[in-house]
Length: 243
Ligand code: 6PG
Image 1 (cartoon, rainbow, N blue to C red):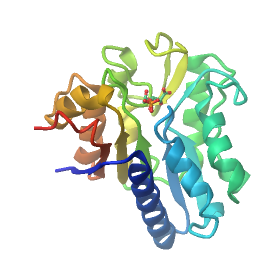
Image 2: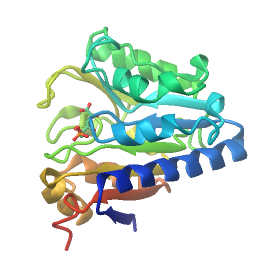
Image 3: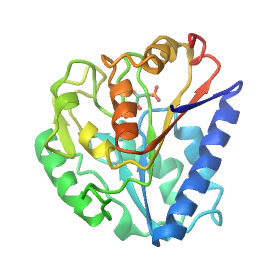
Image 4: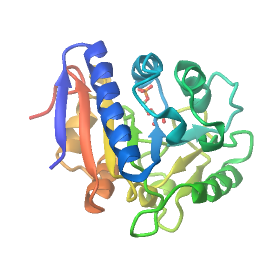
């Protein structure tokens, strides 16, 4: 059963995300020499990224393979770029190894960008099932229960034969994206689902009840079914409807 932790203040939520991330990635590097971290897009992770940017010595940054869980099909310097936002808040401020940064090629059309990102994942160590081992994964949650760019009812949610899918009709602009799939999430070892704000309360409660109409519930299920650990990190507003 996934752990749920609820925080009164946004800064407490961000601090918990940062502490758990340092612990998880540090342990993974201890075990294997490197660790793979999947970043989340959207606005919620920004405060945690900024806290981690102040932790130069807390992690062997140059041993981290860094991915973005989903990306909008825009250039990295476009204000909508998830990678661009994470770089500005964190990656440009810590001593990561540029050869270990898997930057999505957002200027390509969705399906081509997705195929090239899937090919780039070959650089990531695999788990016993042959999937990229995603040591630590951050997932955000949309008010419709989407996560990554897996939106309710869209075909990317049901992709089972690929690690990365193109999205052409995201209801959340911009419409064109690439996203890890539920198949890729089966390689997640440790996953933080991070949500804040009253707008998420209804879908968080439904997802925690296992409502598989919500992609975030399917994502948690995919991680746990494959043996990974899921921790829900919420502020009080997002947790308000939990029974
Ligand atoms: C994206 C994100 C998306 C995000 C949620 C939550 O590209 O939009 O990857 O999945 O995590 O929509 O976004 P907020 O954190 O801004 O609420």
